[in-house]
Length: 333
Image (tube, rainbow, N blue to C red):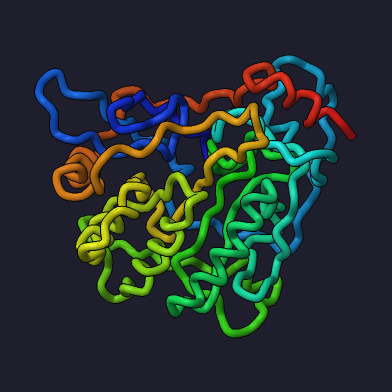
């Protein structure tokens, strides 16, 4: 349904970590030699959010799951229950797994989970606690409640479709639409479409749908001390810069990335008790506005030329490429 994300080049000066698509931010102007620019990923970070299904089918068992060539995503994607024991986020956001995962209840006082057929409403208990806290705080600034998209699989790890990250139970997608005033039916949760907040020319937000309430919503998330990154479309970052006023400290956490026009992606810092979790560097100095966004609005970025040779899908990473503990977690019953 989607292809894995291409690796993103390091931008150490911008506070990025290796191999984390969705961690790239536009390089600030600098004397030659210029820093490397983030490579555009395949369509797996691009909106629209795909519809779900009312007739979810369990994946057939693998004939030989122990083969070294078996992509890790095929193993983790077949686990429907969490690994028991102490909650631990292991490895990096794009190369790790999750022990002791907890499911976010599909309906709460300030949230509803979307696309239930995907079984991706799992996370480290720190993420569950954050979403409960964020939903309540969002209501205080006038947001009716959260529509929660993908979090992680029961045992984290790579996904068969979609994200390259979301592997250690510390990432969550939040739709830019407020929760409705009723508990949604399964059909509504699976088939409702999210709304694109960005204008057709991709240069700014669409004034027909964007409201300042969404700036308040993102600010509320960014001001939570557990949040380390929030990914949005560059046009949305531009709007946030314009609407932030004089209180701008929270803007540094909000980073531009392709897609993310219908939802924003929240990432939490590694919990202190997850000693094998790979933390990200601190965000760069400054608010990330002004010329820091120039790269994202170049014509070559907005409308890239097709590659001279079509890119071929890459095989998924093997279990051996993940932390050693992930083998035990995914192979356990």
